[in-house]
Every structure is written in C-alpha cells, then in structure tokens.
Figure 1 (cartoon, each protein chain N blue to C red):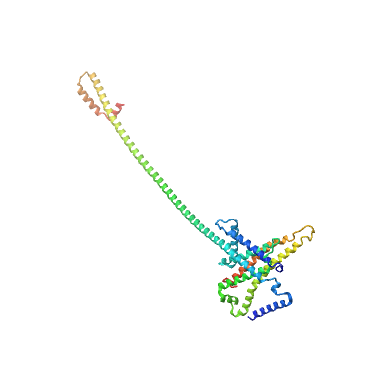
Figure 2 (spheres, one colour):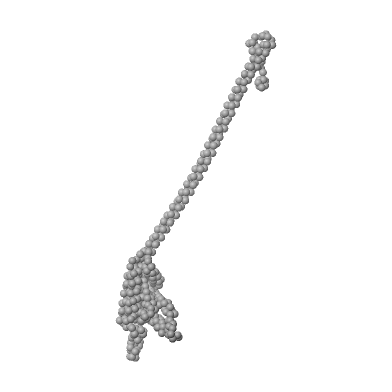
Length: 196
Length: 221
C-alpha cells in the first residue's frame, strides 16, 4: 500500500507543479472537458441501449431461431432420408424374395411339365404297345381265318377233281372226310406254302 | 488541440454517427423476416460477425457482451470513418470521446468482474495467487487496471487525431507544387485512413473483450 501511496502522491505533485507553471491543469492541457465526456458517454450509452434493443437482440434471436429451424429441418431430412433408405432396403429385400419365389415357381412349373411329359410319353408308349398287340392279334386271327378258308376251298377243289377222276367211285362225304384227314396231317408250314 | 477550437462540434458529429447507426438498425430490424432482405442481411452479417468475434475472445457465454462490444466497434468505426468526409470531424479525434468510451469500458469490465466473482473475489483476483506477494501485486494490478482506460483512450485518440492532422496538412499542400492546379496529396492518406479506422475500432473492441475475459472469465492471467 505504501507503493500506491507514493505513486498517487507523485502524480498529484506533478499535476500541482504543472498548474503552478501557468499552463493550466494537465486535463486542461489535454483539452479534456468533463461536460463533453459526460455528454459523449451519455450519447454512447443511448446508442448502446438502442442497438441492444433494436439490432443485437432481435438479430441474434432470429439467427438463433433460424439456426434451430435449420437444425430441426436437417434432422427431419436426415430422419426422412434414413426412413427412405430403410424402405429402399425393405423393397429390395421384398423384390429379391419375389424374384426368388418367381424362380421357384418357374422351376416347379418346369418340373411339373417335365413330369407330365414323362407321364404322357409313358401313356403313349403303353397305348402304342396295346394297339400293336391288338394289331398282332387281329392279324393272327385273320391269318387263321384265311387258312381255314383256303383249306376249305382246296378241299372242295380236290373233292371235285377227284370226283371227276374216279367218276363217282366214292360218295362225297367219304371224300371229304379223307381230304380233311389228309389236311390235318399236313404240317403248318405246308399250309402256309399252300396258301402262298 | 481541436477540442479548444470547437469543443461542441464533436457532439454534433457524435450525434450524426449515433443517428446513422440508429436509423440503419431500426430500418433493418423493423420487419424481421425468415428470408432476409438486403439491409436485414447486412445487419445479420454484422451482428453475427461481431458475435463470433466476441465469443471467440471472451469464450463460451460471451454472447451477452456482444451488444456492448458491438456498439463500441460500430460507434468507433463510424466515428473514424466520418472524419473522411470533407468538412466533417471524427468524434474519436477528440480525447473527450475516447476517454468517455474508455471509462465506460472500464466501468463495464469492473461491473462484470464483480458480478462474476463478487467484491472479495475481485480484490483477491487483484491481489494475485500468492498471499505473501499481495502487498506488491495489488498496487501493480490496480495501476494496471487504471492504466487500461488511459491506454485505450490515448491510443485511439492519437491514431485518429494524428491521421486527421496529416490529412489536413497534405490537403493544405494542394497548390504547393503546381500553383494553379489543386493536387489531392491527402488522397493516399485517406485511403490508408480507411484501413486505420477499421484497425483502431478492431483494436479497441478486441482489447475490451480481452479485459472482459480477464476480469469476468474463469481463467487466471
């Protein structure tokens, strides 16, 4: 505190000496006038309160509001973006599932078609076999019929020829029995050759 | 000094500066809209820049000091610039103006220092961190505090007053080289004055922010 006292004393002494030197006070020499200082201070204070009320507070307030609004909108946009992204992933998953299902169905259809084709082929094969067998049977039956007819006609011709040759030495019934007996004794191949 | 010649003229030009700033801010914020017009945009730019400037120096929570420091900056800048207008006089070229501003800054800083730490806390702050050194530190700190408004006011006054005097002298040399053709020798100095006007307003405001931070902030210097 002693130091402060000595400094203040020195300043006061210097000011007093300047005053006694005839140049007026230090403040006067510097052109300082307290009424002017008060007026300038009052003017600045008025400007300060006016600017605070009409410039800084409203502008800072609207800047804060705008910042908050931008932050909110950005957050909303971010949320909407993430929702859209989620939806996109869901749709992609669903599309992939649908594609897989469609592929499976196509494969099932192909398999089913192949099975039907095989079944139809088997049925056709069986039908063909059946028709073939039936044809063979009918052919065999026709052949038998033809053999009998040929034998009958040959027998008739033989009887007629023999009758003519021996001039009725035997009756027709005896000739016919003899010829049938003869034909029965003939082998099947002989019958075929005879037919041919 | 000019104050002896026309002491009350300064008040007139101060009034002009205050009126210009007041009208601009009133017109700019009369109808605030979410999508700003030109004037509102300009004001928003100025206020936001000043706010960032103050918060950048004072730190978090410095927004509450933006109106004071912003008003200081704008008033000093416009006061400096109005001196460039022929026939006008820069209010900051008067020690009365700069002393008033420096004293208001001093009072503002002390008020917020006491508000933040209390009277005892503020005195302890001035006494320094080591109690044994308090008898030495307290007077030094006190003188330092009192020297701040002195340095603020003298610096601003000296720069602007000196600049204006140089411009006046150079303008007086208009017919010195060519007798019948006026040469604006002061023009380069006036361009330079645009820079110094801004720099001085910035320096005053920046130092005010630093003093606020040292006085009301949490950190020790």
